[in-house]
Image 1 (cartoon, helix red, strand yellow):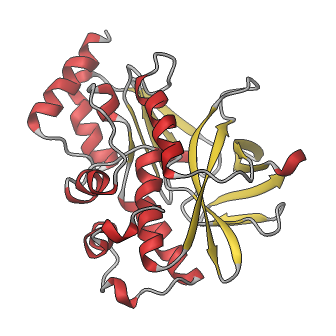
Image 2 (spheres, rainbow, N blue to C red):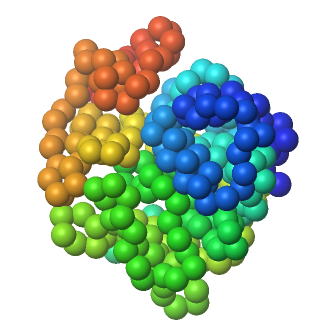
Image 3 (tube, rainbow, N blue to C red):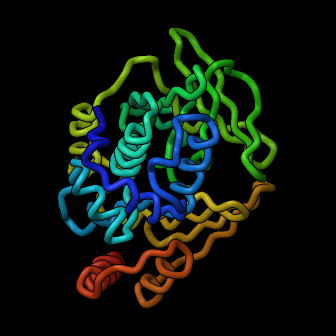
Length: 276
């Protein structure tokens, strides 16, 4: 389903810092944790191609060229399509889900976020490498909703609502906050093509017209949205400051490990400057 047979698994594993050949990996819980954690550590969440006016391609080779070989980042459809292809290639059963973002207040948002459910050792696990700086670094168990899940200094839980809706929650500053909600309905790669088209082209999409780059670090989680750089700490504190055009490329490199080709960097700075 996820075209895992088209993925250069060794190149992907090298990109995320896992040594050895793909043949040494087994579809067990240890591997699921290792791949998920390494992926989220190595590959930054970013939607810069949308800002640059470029189409976001979701076929496996295009994602591999961008996120693996060019060492770029991507947003949820790219990140989780790549993760799904890798997990499928290793031997996991992987299915998609569509989620509603709940970080924007009480308003009902459309289903625009792509997540994965992988089966390991007979149990379902939420896998998501594409929710930015508040997203999980590791798989989250779905078998028994309600329990707290510690991931280093960060804590998550999944709660169940009516009609089988599951909600991923994030403990921030001593309070639980909903991140997103998803139903049991399975999504396929073709469904993500439609969601991707909306997110990358519709004028009301959150990704249109501004820089969005994020990373869920172990100690500090970082987000650059528009001109505002936020550093989120495990105790709930966040530090915010403005990023001007003259320092944009340095911030992308220093804070997020992103280095763009010279022409792309110049165009990004031009767009950032035009926002003054």
